[in-house]
Amino acid sequence: MKNIDRRKFLKKTSLSAAALATASAFTACAEEQTERAANAQYMGDFAAPNLDTVKIALIGVGARGSGHARDFATLEGTEIVAISDLYEDWANRSADRCKEIGDGKRHQNIKLYHGDENLWKQMLTEVKPDAVIICTNWKNHAPMAIEAMKQGAHAFIEVPIAVTVEEMWQLVDTSEATGKHCMMMENVNYGRDELMFLNMCRQGLIGDILHGEASYIHELRFQMEEQERGTGSWRTHHYANRNGNLYPTHGLGPVAQYMNLGRTDDSFGTIVSYSTPALGRQKYAEKNYAADHKWNQLDYKGGDLNTSIIKTNLGRTVMVQWDETSPRPYSRLNLIQGTTGALAGFPTRVALEGGVEGLTESHHRWAEGQEALAVLRERYDHPLYKKLNESTRNSGHGGMDGIMRYRIVECLRKGLPLDQNLYEGCFWSAVGPLSEASVAGGGAPQDFPDFTRGDWKGTKPLDIIA
Picture 1 (cartoon, rainbow, N blue to C red):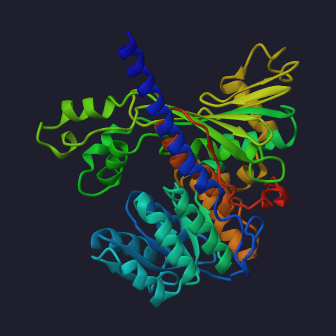
Picture 2 (cartoon, rainbow, N blue to C red):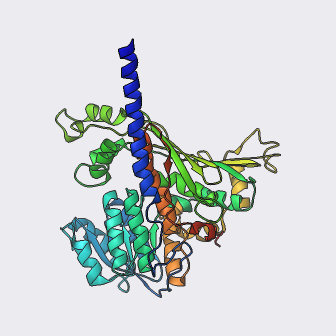
């Protein structure tokens, strides 16, 4: 009996020690870099000098990047000046499409760089673009953005902004030192219902906000068929080697802006995280590929579903879930709970204390369904959506992509602060590595770094932009 107890004790204390070591390592990351470098500037409400024409270069024009190239080319005041991609056919495809859009006037002198992994660096030094759109695999996001800013360009990065806390600090330091924007292009913040919920929250319809729920539930096992090019060729290795919430920002970004996290009111405090067993990817590989296939040689460590809970400085909570493996319908949850009501997505619905005028009589019933949604949108659609809906509806993801691209160009041309600042991209993306640390430590709480160094308290909330 003594031996059994001793074994249990040793196992328990060993796990505790591992959790403490993990927590200590990540706490150190959270606490380092507390002082801003001399001559550096805070970028929270930063507005760069306006540009009459925004000269744009793109790195990576596969599925996502090709859409960016096409739609940025349609916007007034833009000039596509360079494209870099590993594959010549992809680079030529996007360049040809941009030239067609330019109708013999704009986008006619696009320099192409392809065939080598490092030619994007040559592109930056030769072309000197105003803005660089980065749509590559995740591990390249931070290094490419850092170099782009050092070469004098604003950096716009696909999600996530980076994969490690250290990289996020490097992005912060570089942006602050160079005075160049570094924005993670979280398109979901520009979705119709997300914009409507932001408008409703700003109008105080749900009272004081207490809690949010965000997710990226999107079964993407089919991407494993992309074995040479495309997302699955590199993302599958992340699923195998990392255990946490690897893709938090689509759900979290809008909820964080409803709550003003990292701006004036409140900011990110701590996170705890747990993952389910890792079963689905291995089973899918065994079912669909030969035993000696490379996908069956991986040791899948990442849990199929991850659930994380964020505690803010004010004590509010946000649940963030991620699952790209399990067979179920798509959802971002998109729930925000206040003292006088709640807004929720998938399907879009509203409950208010005392009922929703003309739709429900109490908060015990959701205002939902097509008729109710039409009424809610008539009352609360965001003015930005009303302004741009007709021109962006075919731009991708229900029009959210087009609104985002329009706003990026508008802010650069008018010298306005961006809708999403550098620090928000880091806070939202930090859920990735911090959740991994928490899972590894048995759910040990992890502190969020304060990427703003305390300056979030003076950063204005995102306005309802018309």
